[in-house]
Image (cartoon, rainbow, N blue to C red; front, side):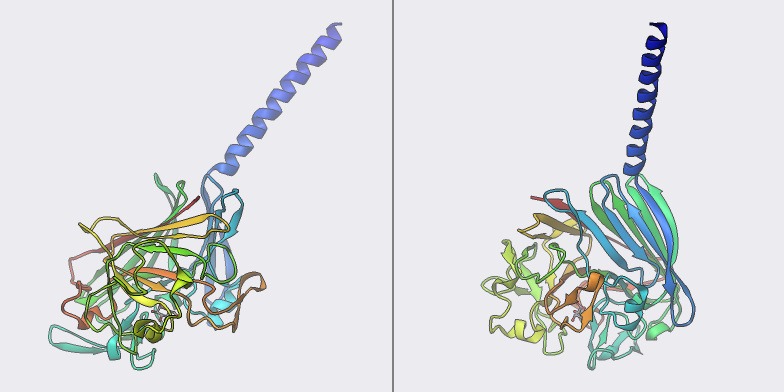
Length: 381
Ligand code: GLA
């Protein structure tokens, strides 16, 4: 009898112990964390690391030090199943060989500067003309092709990765030593928050952005995604995709996304702007009452139920519908990226601002601090 009792007791104690062990294990799995691994080496033998950030819900972002690029981003669908919603490569190799800015940090100047020229204080600066006669995304070796220094951060908002880079005076033709910090934070609200800051020792121009190609279904065409852009106006472009300087109403044009509309609904209309962009590749002028964080766009993918909202402190949003993808890239998991299989929502100052006095200024002076924030938030419906 006593033996039986003591066995029973032992059993009870053991199972209680095991279940509390199991509990703490579950908690450990749900604890936000960040893990560093080697991802490969560049042609000049520089080491590239990749960091895996996981939040309390199991949402996972992998970010590498080459280009500060988001390599994968796994978020739940409406059944809780995680899926990767950004395009890219499985291995570093692909990024080094042929990279249309997959997930990259873009700088020193995101988007185009006409003829690669601008003037500051009466002096003309010449930049690389790497997009026809225009300058695009920081030049030949922009911030998407440099190795960033990385440090892990744990803040009240979540786990983060702080990336820093010093762009030397004259690099890619830009004046001033620019000290740049980009911090990615994966919050427990399923947000990827990006904080950009920069200081300079000589007057210069700065316009930093993020170039993930999203596909909320995880694969296939993006034309059935529904998009809302919080903008009544956009900046029409010429044949070289340089803004004309006009801020034009979106009303009664295929650029009107004030009400959620599928991306594919009007994309092939014989519209002069869509023809110039080979689809959507334009900057929208965000509606805002102050310069705080504002909802810029919302995207809904009906099959998976995934919703992505973009919030930003920036005045503009480039919506690019992946028009230049042409099936020549085989990306993650052997997926072939055909035309319009991914879209970008690049928060920014307007393209060619340095040559457009009526656009918000992109000039940064010594003693000032460039500081912007963009949040990509994931939910389902
Ligand atoms: C931006 C540009 C596009 C294109 C893509 C990358 O969105 O506006 O024209 O260059 O980047 O291909």
